[in-house]
Image (cartoon, rainbow, N blue to C red; front, side):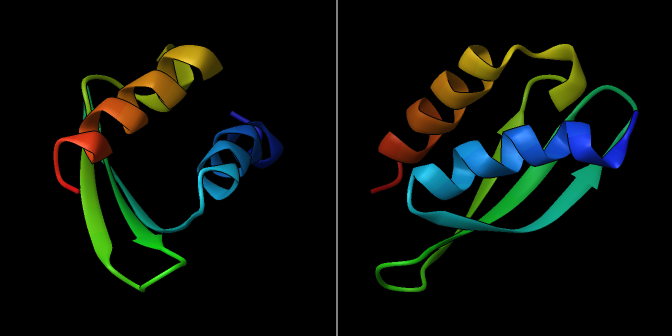
Length: 71
């Protein structure tokens, strides 16, 4: 996968007001560490599968759902 492909996912995170700190890739899933820009709080979001297996809309929906449970 080209590096520029993942920038689409990173731009979604940035539009939501977060900075992507780390991405931990496992065999069938990924874990993201996101920092909220407004207060610096760090969130850990576990994706059900790798980003390249998800559509951009599905990725954004999963991030929003995961973060709404933790606010």
